[in-house]
Structure formats: structure tokens, C-alpha cells
Image (cartoon, each protein chain N blue to C red):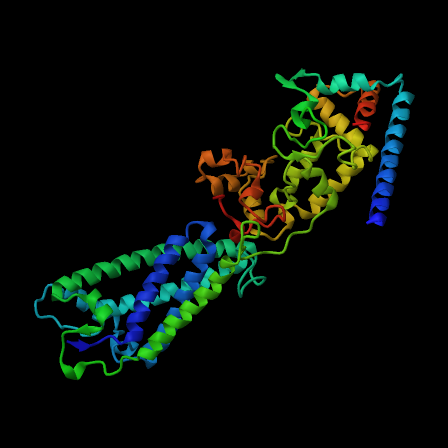
Length: 130
Length: 366
């Protein structure tokens, strides 16, 4: 039991390291692209903001719900989406390629354009501590 | 009254009629393939029994007692109005020919049915022997034979009704009791009861064996007859596609459709897939080697053959084969909570993700 607990703590530790590594590396890359200081507050605002795109009101919360710790649902197919918060779903924010793919796909769907390096950095800063 | 039809002949007649009715009723809907096939095997087995019984059976059951030259049939039919025409204790020439033709038709239906099962579903003794194309071609013949059989059965029924009223003798009842009006010397001496019991026992036993898996199934593990091994899968394909929807196997669309999907990835049903070039190459590669043209499954063959060469559908629901096979599905069912749209193949096709779409794995949600 004790050993189990130690293993879990260790694994969680390694995982948060992986998140920290990936996110830090991304943030550095965004700053290299010209972004300034990142703000979790701006990220939060963007997460809840509603955009008029393709004649629809769209927001991150349209699919991810307004609780990042809960499962969401694809707007069109209804397929479940795992929670976004790394504290609930440790796999989140551990793969740079996936981060960029989803930023591009979802910014274009929600905002109607790709997100800037600044916006992406704000986002990650907000999400990493959820 | 004397006995004319021995028990195996009567048992054969009614089991054969029942098997033909069940096969006819279940033939139209691919969801009933398993029952249809069982009825077909029964009918085929009964034909084989009747062929043997026609040689070694009772005197009125033997072919030699009722298969006449075609001229006898013509005379029999043209004689109908003569009041004192010959009275046949066993089959009259028309009835004799009905037996021969019905047996032949069902024999051909059974053989062609096994060929369709082997070709299209990859099941039964001819699995792997016949190609899908051959299976599909024989399927058309099989259906045509079915219509001819229906015609012959109706003709047979008309003949029985006509002859019954002409001779003031209830022929269907005689096929139940075995008895007809006649001289004691003409009676059939043996009833061969044990053989009839064996027939019923064999059919009951095979029905039970076929039914058994249905009894042990549950909602999560429904029994899938004609289960085919899953097609080749690819982790990247599986993961990328299933992030938003069922990972439709490349075997469901032709190669040109997959090319379009990945070349037009920026506009994938309202979303930009944003796949990086390396992933696009890998996904194109997997779909090229596993597209509908490359896969030896009925759904793949029928889908590609339902398209004109200038059609490049992006949706499986855009193919003529899909439309034809789903035309009878009630619109309300697509909106049902348990289906939630036409893109959720797997809510009715339990082997959709594996790419098989076999007849036995289909079930509308209940």
C-alpha cells in the first residue's frame, strides 16, 4: 500500500515534470516568436469569451463545458472529450505536436482565425494550473 | 380410407414448406441472414433426404411411381374436363412434376445460397473459394431462383385447390393424415415412423445448436454470427480520427475519397484538421493500401461498384450503396438517443470500427 502510494506520487511528479517541460518549452518558443509576458487571467478570459464565427456563437466552453475538470462533447458528433485540466487528466499538455494541432484546429473553428503566439501562451499559462 | 403417404413423406412436405416460407420471409433483410441461412440449410437437407426417400421410400413416395413423361402431363392437363379421367391415388402427373421442379429449384437455391454466403460474407464451405464479385453475381441468380420458386409454389397451390374440388377430396388434409379413399390392396404398408422422428430430431437439434449462442449473449457482447476477423488497423489512424468521431476504416471508401479528405484537410466538415505533413503522409499511406479497392469485403466491393468513376464522396453516407441499404430506415431513428446520427455506424453495426460490416453484426437499437 505504502509502496503503491510512493509510486503514485512519483508518477504524478514525473508527469507534472513532463507538463512543465512541454509547456515551458512551448512558452519559450512563443516568446521567441515575439510574444511578451504571459497572463493566466487573459487566458481565462479567452477561454470563456464567445465569438461569432460562421454565423454561430462559439466558445471554448461550447465543447469543453465551463468546467475544465469535466468531460466535454464534440459540438457536431457528440463524441465525449476528456477533461482539459491536467490535474484531472494528466495526459493533457504533454505533447507539443498535439498542442499545436489542436490550437490550430480549434482556434480556427472558435475564433475564426489562428491564435497568435501571445494568445497561445496566455492559454497554456491558464490551463497548466487547472 | 387407406394410407397413401407414409410419415416421412408427410413430415418432409410440411417441414419443407415451413423452411421455404421462413427462407422467403427472411431473405429480404440482411439483418436476418443467420435465420435465412438456417432455413436454407434445412431446406437443402430436406431435398437431399427426399432424393434418397424417392428411391428407397414407400411406394407412393418413390419417383418411379409418379415421375411421368412430359406427354403424360400434357394429357393430364388437357383431360381436365373429362368427368371420368384417371384418378391417381398418389401424385398425379402435374403433382409429380411439381415435386421434381420444386426439389430442383430448392436444390439450386441451396447451392447458390452457400455460394453467396461464401463469396459475400466469407462464411460456410465456399468461404475463400469464391470472390466477392462471384458472390454478388450468384446473389442475383439466387434471388431470381427465389422468384421462380414463388411462382412454382403458387402454381402448386392452385393445382392442389383445383384438383381437390374436381375430385371432391381434400388433398391438403390427406398430406396431414396420410389417408385417402381407396382399395385396401393399394395401401402403403409401412409408415416408417422412426425415420420421421429422426428427421424432426435432427432439425430440432440443429436449431438448438444454432440458437445456443443467442441465449448466452448480453447487451455488451451480442452474438455476431458470420464474425469476420478485423481488418488491418493503424494506431495513428485510430487515434487521429477517433478524437472527434468513429474511426471509419479506409475500407469504407475508395482511395480517391481518402486523397480528397487529406488534401482538403483544411476544410474537413467545418474544421481544419491541422495535421502536420508527416501525419498526412502516414495516413495517406495507410488509406492507400487499405482503401475499398484493396479490401476483399462485401461493403468495400459494393461501395466502390455503386460509384461512378467521376464521383468522389467525402462521406460514406454519400455513396449509392449506403443510400440503397439504408433507404428503409425511419428518419426518427437517426435522431434517436441510441443512434445520434448517420455518422455513428457503430451504434447499429457492432463491427463498424473493425471495418467488417458483416450481416450478422447488425442490429437496430431496441
